[in-house]
Image: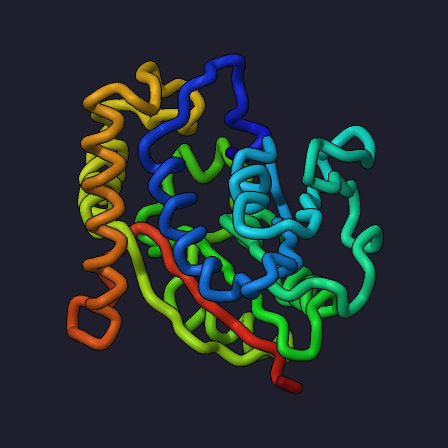
Length: 245
């Protein structure tokens, strides 16, 4: 969760739970038989995903966020306030989940993450899709932009990485967001400020049902990547590898 959305609420929004489920599934293929794959979550927010990432490996997981008050450790998670605290060439797989839209120099940030990757290291990036869906919620989160597939691929290419796979995901939330954005432009309704106010526990039937629905949605929209419906998704995921690999 973005630190701007964090609250004392212990519950997690189904979208956040599902996104973590699906990204972890993608990253699990990088896990080595010995359990020593080295991961880094850059822009790690409240450490929720970094802690879940630690279940994939016996190696420490690096969580980097410039908004942390100080560096330290949180169980198996090494907390860093700057990427310079992560050694060059030390990470097998890094994650930038909904991060690069927050910075002016998105290419520069991806290049900085490239520095910490091993020669055959991979980087997984997710970003919000469709500039037409820009809303008060983007302003609240401090977004600079939303992306289309071409723009994200251009960022990756200029940063010196090449893309293994790129796809939109979450078609149903995209439809809901489009409807909400249209109503907001008409002055009807208000944008919700983040996922931090979800009132139901993870094991509540409503949360479980929505989480399962979103997981299925992710799998379906990923499969649509080679079809005319490829742009049907609220977010975009790119899995990248170092050009030198």
